[in-house]
Image (tube, rainbow, N blue to C red; front, side, top):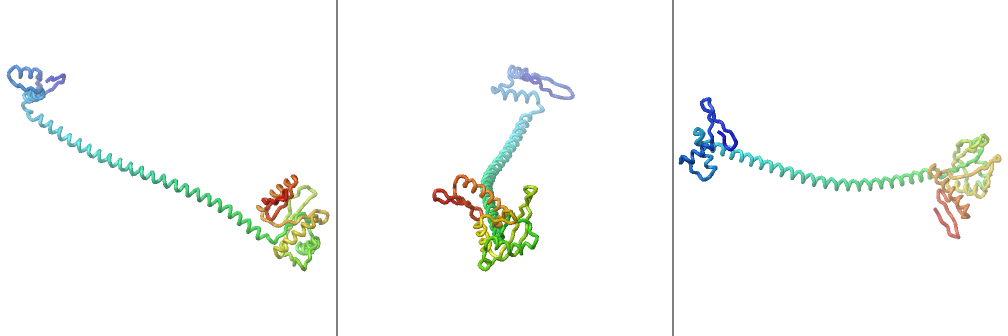
Length: 276
């Protein structure tokens, strides 16, 4: 049956019956049949009349629509529930992310503080190490420029050092515990300035030896200049060498300068003393 551009087919007894619903509507109206004012009611009545074996088809369709609508509403409700759960999880995730950001900032601040404390601790440990090393060398004297001695080094220094420094053995209680030589690299083929380190009985004796060497100013052995220094750890010696260069610069500018033990520079200018 053709209705509003659609073709409806009904099968009966293996044959096809085609009926024009428009014609049926006209026949119903002209023959004093259906007089429904509502077009939908008219169409439904015509459908029922055209298909007498399907009187309940409309109700069946409505039942299917109602059932499908219920299922759709149920699915929508389930979808709303899932969306609500997703929104809740999203809110929880945002809250967790905010807490994590706060913890990350706190951890970063803690790490920065730990790094700062570690840096301070490293500096303090270096200072303590230098202090311990210098304290272990506090009774040592370093002699630079002393030529190789054939006899026993301790016996030689026990006689030569007090004699060359004009030290009173009874007052100073001068006694050398041990001594050894450290050969240095040759600055020229004909020059060799070895270093001798020896340990005396006390720090006071060491200080008296250094003071006597400063008073003598020029000390020679076999025609070579000999210098007495305190024995310091390598790091302190490096800093002391840098201070000596600065001291020389200050003296070139006419400032009275002196190097204090172990790595302090004293500069005097216009009767004002500065210590660096």
